[in-house]
Image (cartoon, rainbow, N blue to C red):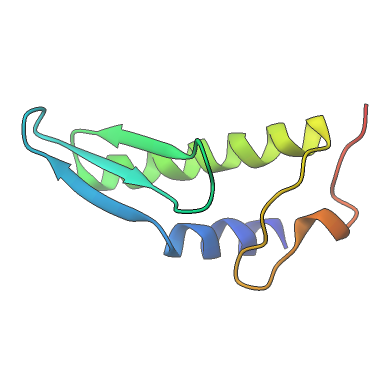
Length: 83
């Protein structure tokens, strides 16, 4: 379920070229703070996946809501970790 969530979220990603840096910028709309920058598109995609993974893990750890993506709601799947 978690892998499917990550895949669906990454399908929503938007990428653009930053001319002044000769780099790529990527973000996932609706997931505030999930972004990446890298000198190649592939690198940007990899870093965005890592940023998303860390973001989801942190929100789970803190017990914060995770926005629904593609009909998947991780908040009700028993994945949240309360400490």
